[in-house]
Image (cartoon, rainbow, N blue to C red; front, top):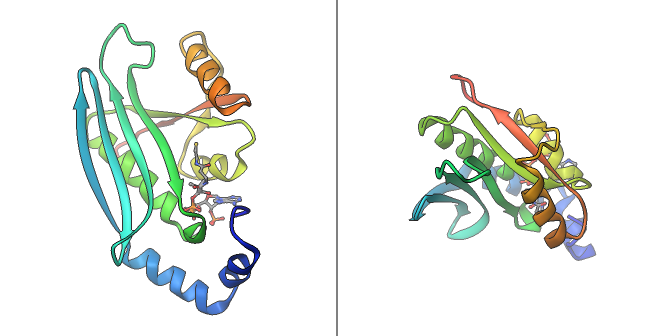
Length: 164
Ligand SMILES: CC(C)(COP(=O)(O)OP(=O)(O)OC[C@H]1O[C@@H](n2cnc3c(N)ncnc32)[C@H](O)[C@@H]1OP(=O)(O)O)[C@@H](O)C(=O)NCCC(=O)NCCS
């Protein structure tokens, strides 16, 4: 939210905007598009309202047995600043978890910058727990640190048969 201009930040705090936010949350529709390149499958989920894209997230599945990152990964979650704190990010993550469960996943993993409190709090509410930095995760965490300029942690949500 800090990336919003001060005027927009004030606007977000008004009662009218909060009512609009609830309306947007209730009327947002999530669309999923699947792609597949070799042994990497990707589903991109996008939430939109009145034709306006609010955010997106990906479920990436790696199936090669020699790939240390084999499994289901939640990636690239992002909500447009004006539409944050309306429950849209959580709705998209739930769509990712449901799709992963439908595809037979037992768990979904992700990486997040260690100081990204808003994202970490969202993931924890959805059942993700921080994983110890094991040898198989180390290369990915180092790669993310090089890209992001700060340490990353890996998180995992175990999928049960009920809703996330
Ligand atoms: C992280 C992000 C996706 C959250 O999206 P969102 O739509 O605002 O999240 P929601 O409204 O669904 O929030 C759900 C919960 O997440 C947590 N949360 C979200 N934003 C937060 C913030 N700024 N500060 C603290 N907690 C926050 C809260 O626990 C919140 O529940 P609550 O509103 O009942 O308190 C959004 O802030 C974003 O796009 N950030 C920039 C990109 C990014 O960091 N992506 C994650 C990469 S790993």
